[in-house]
Length: 218
Image 1 (cartoon, rainbow, N blue to C red):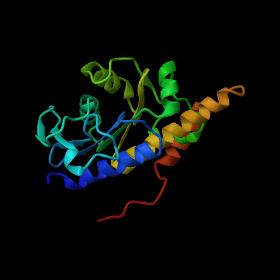
Image 2 (cartoon, rainbow, N blue to C red; image 1 turned 135 degrees about the vertical axis):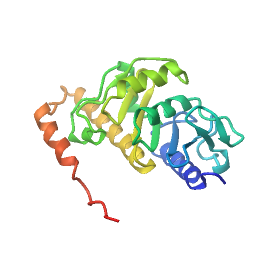
Image 3 (cartoon, rainbow, N blue to C red; image 1 turned 90 degrees about the horizontal axis):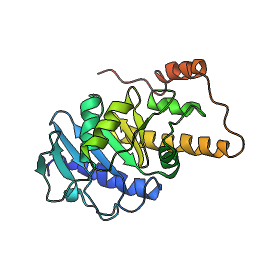
């Protein structure tokens, strides 16, 4: 099976995304890009995450040609291909309708630095793209035009999208942004957060460059 490992990961993380309540029903979508092959594996349209099988995952190129699979790809395939074209280092995209990120997206407000973990996105503020109808080239363009240096972007009146160098990192970022959104929302209900300053966040962003275990040399 072409890109079997990637297909299996999408099945696994689709179940995880649903269980973690980052989305509901069949909303949201996941993809992995194999740069060596030039192909993207993406979750199918309209199939429940606990019903998806590896063979249901669709393989496409970045020009929207279906390479393998007999299912219809996610309606947001253009949103995913736009990220891989905009961010050459991106290898996975997770698009959620998680509650608190979607609250801010519905307000058409960015996520601000109420907590330093927002630095996981590589910025001190996660932007919100203007509203466009779901599944359209216009939405894909709005997201790619807005995301900038961030690895996450809110989609007005819609949801959130996270990019990563692997599906694990993209999913972790999606979880982290939901944490930041919930924290910011909750603090707003009792007087509003004290946001971290640009200077404070600059220090965090610099520190994050060396966070975690060092990469092993070949």
